[in-house]
Image (cartoon, rainbow, N blue to C red; front, side, top):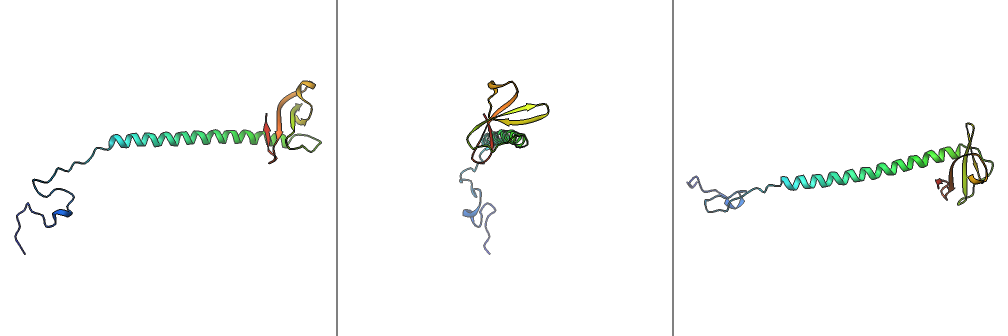
Length: 123
């Protein structure tokens, strides 16, 4: 075994740092600003997506409410897809009608259209 001075490495090319005085200084980059910027951007994206999903959920729940109300209301006809119908309330009962709100004096709830998926869409 050969005696080497303390300042000489066995495999200087494999070291993660310079092994002699003439080697370039190795500096670790400060990426804290980069991390903060990227974390803020990612959090903003997640927040935007969450708000979008929340709005979509609220719209879906409102649509569900109206469909549940209409399907549980009274009507003595088979609704036609694409036609406009009006929902009214009399006492504690709801009923669906073809008669528009300006044609009679009933408590009007809303105007709806049945789509091809049998979902009532509020107009």
